[in-house]
Length: 193
Image (cartoon, rainbow, N blue to C red; front, side, top):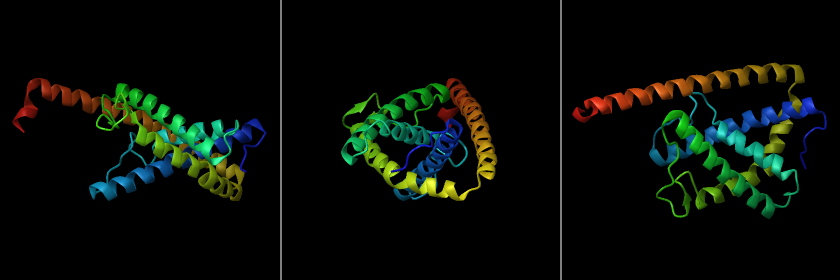
């Protein structure tokens, strides 16, 4: 079983890498799913780059929560479903407030909560949580063990900086687009298109 190191600094280093890895893995999964269903490439994330931080956040919450006892598959599945659905609910609400745009809309799904999450989504989060903790996390730890720590820390610092800059620019860009859209709607210029 993969566990966090006991040294606090080392633990944060591993946690940060897990966040980045799952943000990237989640982005890849979203892009592949959308490419399959819509037959075209769509950058599904909130950010402009190749990461969906929501997946990193959910994975870290699942990993940390699982360290408190949900080691068997069933309990890990249930915990992951609850953590995933709750995270999707909160993040969906926050992203909508930040950008003026709803990134996920489960309003048409049966058993949804405010259109931000649904029972199916929770089920899928449960499955993904089991895969993340039991399969992907050990692979990430194996890759980290092969990376010299000084190089890993430098690369981590650069990647977190890039992601932070991407987040700030994405919020600014999306707010600007929303203001422009609202302005066009207000003046009626969209009605002529």
